[in-house]
Image (cartoon, rainbow, N blue to C red; front, side, top):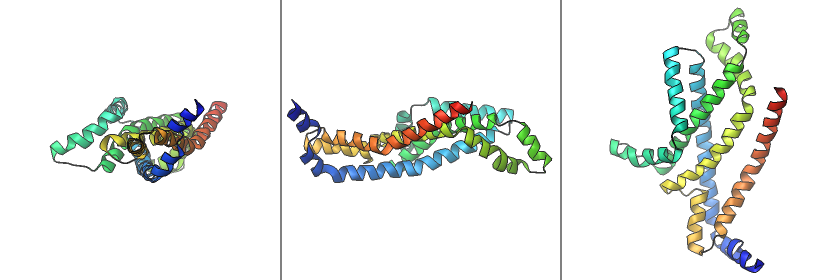
Length: 224
């Protein structure tokens, strides 16, 4: 029984045969995360800062945007971007489409996280900044945002972890990220070992980050 399990799920010969495919997939996964993560954070931060000016009609639009991108399934969003935009004359490559879908979807989550952090900063901080002669942008950049980011660090890290996981949706547009590479390798070897190897790579890559997120969440709970 054990030999059958090893032969099917831990086949070293299959792994040695296809490991270049897995390394290629890992490279694309890291590239997707490295590009999409800062875009998502920056986009969400812009949304949250715009909300902090409390312009009523504009805030309604921002809330609508946040709710829309958070409620819209990211898989459907990717399909619409990659397969739908060409009908409007805009054709994007698989990498660009995947980055755009991930950034759009996660900008809503980051926007809400940053917004909550900004709202948690006491209003007296703004008044103190005005009393010292700071301009509005200086108050936001130098006083409000540093405190807001500290308050929101745990959910920011948690959402960043989830973003890295969502890079696997790029397989839908035939981008050779880690999951698709593992599936191609499985088809070549007729063995599920590549999928097990891909799962192990995800675990090794993300587990330290997950532990860091857990530590941040515990600290946040103790500070309440």
